[in-house]
Length: 327
Ligand code: ATP
Image (cartoon, rainbow, N blue to C red; front, side, top):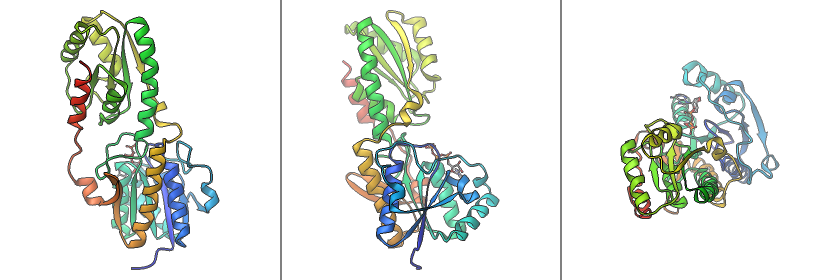
């Protein structure tokens, strides 16, 4: 096994708060261990184009508290082709990069695994996505911060909902994952949840709102994950209003503000631990894995298992708790 001399670090796919903290941890842990670091800009697009920059300790000053990613992110169709990956490898080789740390979601990991196998280059992946939908980690970077943003918005919406006897439909991010919606439902005290993993019919939702009205609820919040099968908060609100019009009905789409903002303390510590762990795993000889937190431990899971392992399941107990809290 050859000693690693230079690590390339990049962010790819959707950005998430905490990515910068992870970049900082990768750069400083590598430098501490005598390993040089190249920052690869714009994910796989920048890798193909050789958009690289030498990273020193001061390159990552004052980024710990910033949302987004200083290395920028991109989605790159060319990297999906063997020719694109060959171009990327030529750039990586010419820059003397002999190991990679990828920060992103499952698409980013899939690309990293292919690249690592094709060119025999070690890669560690750090889960950075607000959706919390990656196997191998209880939490992904950005999930906690996004939840705090959502809760802040719901608290404010609740004030106006209560003052006017309103029924609010709040749409949160989550195309395939109801994690943010479920968490917001419990932490924000929502009356009902519409999640991509559950095929809740509009009639079922109306029944639960009717029951809540009978229990003298004067205002209500329904959280709709963007991937809910009924087609988002506007559609759900429209169809509910046709049959249930006791309240003034409003819709609020939280949108991309959920992606931004200064990372929470939890995300900063998690990102720092993951970045530190990723570099140390490379030094220990791990050649293809994702970093995660299980309980309070930072662990690695092979990319093979992370990408093709068990399906992620919604936390049914938390869903039950959300329902019980709504009596
Ligand atoms: P998120 O979905 O959380 O926003 P992600 O990392 O899953 O993040 P994607 O757009 O799915 O985002 O993937 C990021 C990039 O990874 C793609 O633009 C592409 O360059 C690369 N990639 C994804 N899937 C593959 C694949 N099957 N083969 C090669 N490269 C891939």
